Amino acid sequence: MTHPILNDALFDAMKTSVLPTEEAESLPPLCYTDAEFYQFEKEAIFSKEWLCVGRETWAAHPGDYFTSFIADEPLIVARGRDGVLRAMSSVCQHRAMLVAEGSGKARAFVCPYHHWTYTLDGSLASAPAMEKSCKFHKENFNLPVFALEIWEGFVFINFDQNAAPLAPRLTKVSEVLKGYNLSQAEGEKPTEELSYPWNWKVMFENNNDGYHASKLHQGPLHDFIPSELAEFPDDLPDNTAGYYRTNRTLHPDAAFNATQRAVFPIFPDLTADERHRMVFANVPPTLSLVMTTDSIIYLILRADGPESHRVDQGVLTTKQAKADPAYQQKMAMSFLAASEIIDQDLHVDEMVQIGLRSRFAPRGRYSWQEGAQRLFNTWLVPRYCDTWNRLKRKDFTEF
Image 1: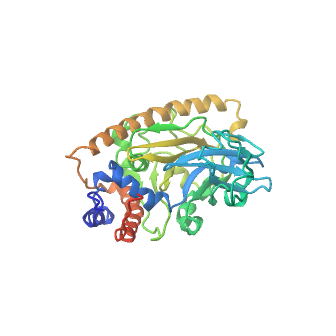
Image 2: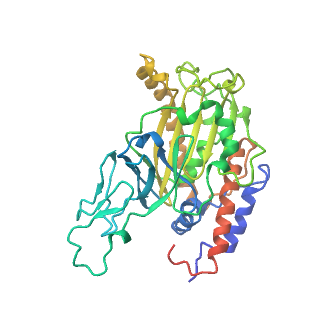
Image 3: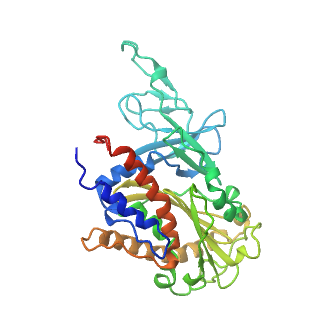
């Protein structure tokens, strides 16, 4: 079988995207638009990498569960009666009906179609009227269970049971985030998922792009964090599972609101120097963090097509923040300012996706202020090339 899009020339061309920032160019546009490439990406990225699906607190007690969906896979994350958090497929092993939706508390998962019943660890407990089915053994029809790891309070799953652990490959990222005590930060579970008509990488790149900030967002809500004060690490290990950008601010405890200053309690372990900057951290392909001294905006990106993805967006603060009688009013003020900035980004993301479909779409050159894009490429390209080299000798029609 021939693959007109996937070929050696495409993957050889990607190698210029991992050159030093002053020499590198962006990925080929079809990586953001082509349906065949998305199918390849499901194998190269989403089938093998750690995927953030939520916060551990979303299923804090036995029986608590929440569901998610990423790269065509419906998931359940549930805390068992034994207190263990597990991730499993939500697909009933009878006729593929989903056994759970939304979030809540359950004693078991009952398929609404034919009432096959699964325990909180995914084991099939009951399959009505199957006693006449030949060689039917319940233990052969459990929900598939996936690898699960907690990092800084976030829940990550991996479809590859043999995947290398995540946390050891995030030591440098954890170091720069240490002062935020992220695992103990608190925030409500997002009440609704967002859905956007552009490729997940477009959103991921924009979330950590320092170059556009002083241009697109110029004005009183953003001018205190100028693009020219962006800084990029030069000591990330080759096997890093994430990357980050720091950005100095014109005054300490800067925040995205009309006062330009923090309105919630400061994360107490931040040093004086750390209070004079913000951190933008990414754990591809799913988690993006914007860290200020009093709050953390997180985005969990969940690809669901070549030109679309879903997002869970939330805010975390210190435990003390909610004790303030004006907490809700301050959060509303901050949300109003952040929404103005986010709306600007969303409009750009949508227009970039339109531009990427054009036959005139370029492979652009980078400014030094786009160092995070090159760091993203150094994570992506080896995974693309390794998978292509593994698969190109096979007939991979299943993708």
